[in-house]
Image (cartoon, rainbow, N blue to C red; front, side):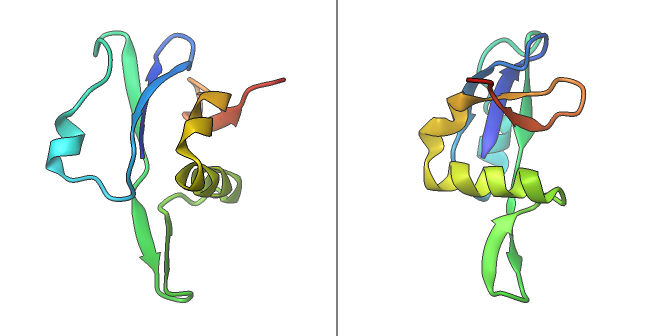
Amino acid sequence: MIIFFKKDTGRIIGTIEGRVHGEMHLKQWVGNKEETERLIVQWIKNEKIQQYEPDVTDLEQKEIFIQLDKNPIIVYDFYIDIKSKKIMRKAN
């Protein structure tokens, strides 16, 4: 998944869904490049369990991306922390 967000607020403004992104996806952009940034999460095969999983080391972040893979529309229930570049759930 590629998540596009506002540089100043972390508000998610769009996504490109998928587990593996080729050159074409990596060239695409949502919004003005001066005002938006992107978070790219590729999936890799975990040889131990013979399944694909998000290529991130933080277990909490990994679980969020697994949830997003199952239900992509919930991405708008999150924002990106602009300092850490981690995806965070919005407060209710």
